[in-house]
Amino acid sequence: MRTKLIAGNWKMHGSKPFIESLMKGMTEQLDANLKSGVLVCPPTIYIPLVESLIGSHKIALGGQNLSEQAQGAYTGEISGDMLKDSGCQYVIVGHSERRSLYGETDVLVAHKVGKAIESELTPILCVGETLEQREKGTTMQVVQQQLDAVIDTLGIDALKQVVVAYEPVWAIGTGVTASPEQAQEVHSAIRAHLRDKNAQIAEEIKILYGGSMKAANAEELLAQPDIDGGLIGGASLKADEFIAICKIAG
Ligand code: PEP
Image (cartoon, rainbow, N blue to C red; front, top):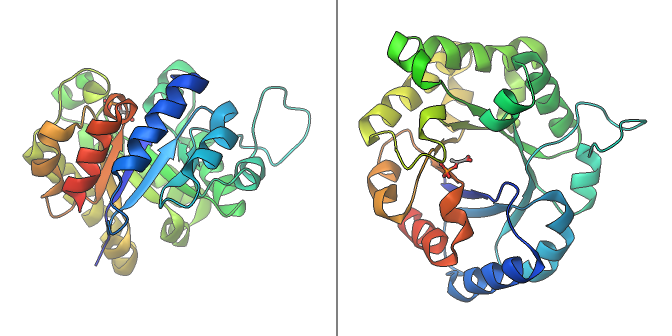
């Protein structure tokens, strides 16, 4: 049985006072008996601060990006080992903002997934189509290509250590959420695609939904059989909203 994971992607938001207040709100309201995993991915520079604010609470830490290199003369980059060393267990890889604004290709994303695994981090591999691709009817083609780049580069067994996040680009930060049916359709198609390669991996892999998830729509989305949690942007910056989603996940 897959347990759920609720992950907050804070993107490039926050300041020390904001983060102190957000984490206070979260830790005060978080139910210690929650079965679902809870994860926050702060801007890299605040990871040590967030780690200290988490204390003994059951909240995992993740990075938002990592280098495809292990170490060396790569000014401004952060390696998987550095994230691991700083208390991270997860790292978001191939977010649509990285793909569209920073030119990350499917192959580069695959190498980043490999580096995350080498550093013993769980990569959260983001996949998803643009509105144009959805309207052209190529959603599954795009998503399969993004997944296959990882499988072709690293082998199917690498997916044992990966969480997938299906994030339709048209739903990220727009307030427009995929309907539960639209999301379930893609999640189940992702699982079917993986089943062709390895039935056990397909059954066990977590597939999160991301795209304007909030407390008001989380219940319906998280009730879908192939939705194993959420990757949450905007709503993860409000303690009450984020904790409400965690409670819905159970
Ligand atoms: C995201 O950035 O991964 C995301 C899902 O953002 P939002 O929840 O704001 O749409």
